[in-house]
Length: 313
Image (cartoon, rainbow, N blue to C red):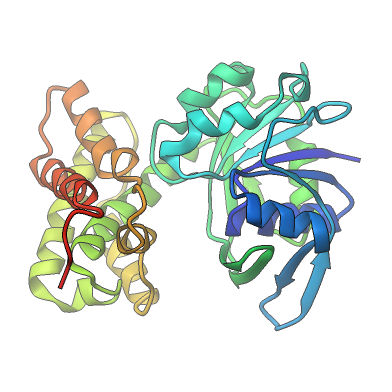
């Protein structure tokens, strides 16, 4: 039996944790949302699948650090990027053993560096997922979309235990692959977030309005082209059609509110530092500038600083 510790029991953390539990893994969910954790403890997680089927999945959950008996084979990090350091405080030291793998499927860049301090860089896996889910209330999650999950080594050397993890995904009905070129996929996803999230958050646009609205499209193009330039400076090979991919994603999710827009509208912190801000930091490292991403980053930070201080029209 595989032992899985999920740090961040939001929509995606619960979806993956529930699927792993149904496949026979022992799962412990960790989250600071006390009401959500208590609901899962009392009545299990209510998971609504894409076909409308409702399942009740029993899993352990905690909002405080508790030792995971026998240690964790996998620590799955699913919190917002800005909360990574704080979330790791929920992981009891006794839960980490010499064989524990840590997998981050978070947005943006910089998360793996933080996680490397937990188990060492050689056992950190970084990845992306196209699965979708929505948290509808305490202890209630709805599966929103199916897509592949890809992950690879933070340092380029595949750690022992990777095949067992792939087998768990397969047993859970989730498509997953190990990729040597994971940083190409990470930057491709980053470009999508760079081109969509800040613009939709600042202007209260649905994703599909970016390709349809000329000023929004031009701003998206400028931000993505900067990210493409910086990725290449980082040694990551992205094709010239990455902009077409970003616009296609915006169109395919036309009615969606981006996660950053949802955060801004709910007056929550955003992941701007790990997305547009990450492009700016990487650019500076190579003696380059990314003025469009710098400006978007500052505008989102200004928006965050106004939470609770003024009434928006």
